Length: 408
Image (cartoon, rainbow, N blue to C red; front, side, top):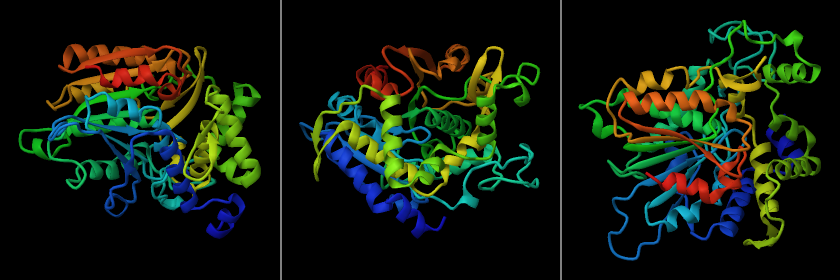
């Protein structure tokens, strides 16, 4: 679909996306934000917003950490609107920076052939194998797909126009963002040495909120083959392998039906969102309306990073149940192996799941990995369950989520 036709059909374009982002953050976050001017030019088009704590006296907060919030699949930086004020009012941090991963949210959307996907029928171990069919074919391996997201993110964190050298950083990632945050911590941990310690981002705390990726894929003997799945799961498996994403379906619906579908889905996933009116810069809208409008515009933006779903993740069914797994898992000793190699400024790792979280099947593997890192790698590591929370625990129980970020 051409850009003009897509924008006409979806009634969306970049200006409307950023307007929706601004209206949500301005209406629902008390602290003002600003966008560093250099980011979209210097970091492959990554979008970010920065919030600063109010300082009551000169110099206060100069040595306090910056919290970086990184969203999950199909989401965007504005989803953390319930967390920002409480974090900044705690007196324990200096800034909150919310980022959109490349190819998602308000960040640049590289064209399809540059986006991180694996095509149907291609060899998962080869990025050059022939392909018969895919909605969008780039044949990225999982490792190259991870680099697609982490390379510009790493450039961002090394930018001395945004981050001071040695500034303590607390990285918080949700869902797929949690997986990528863990992979990033493993990457820079492996780079750490006495020679380049000053050039490595000073990541001191890592918080993984309902992360995908700890539970390793079921073995071939444990897996239920596609032919033996129920019809509904066979359809999901086929659509997944063909790279047909939820975002693609919304684009096909067009503006009216697409907006209604997004609002319905959002209300279904997070039913406690307030429908009471909130005053934004243009009109009176509810929390639900503001978030649904924002989600619609980031959903129908050009397809790009969403194809990470196919590159990085894989649905699988076994006798123990059905779930989504990482093709390169964090569990099974993967994080332990990397964290044991070298020393780094990383002081703690905390993994959070909601008590009603559909991703909680990753908890046993996460707990085992954290216990081993805690005992063998000299990094405080733990797993916690957030009460009264599902997968979107940062919205479902924002106060508990914030306390876990701020606690040692």
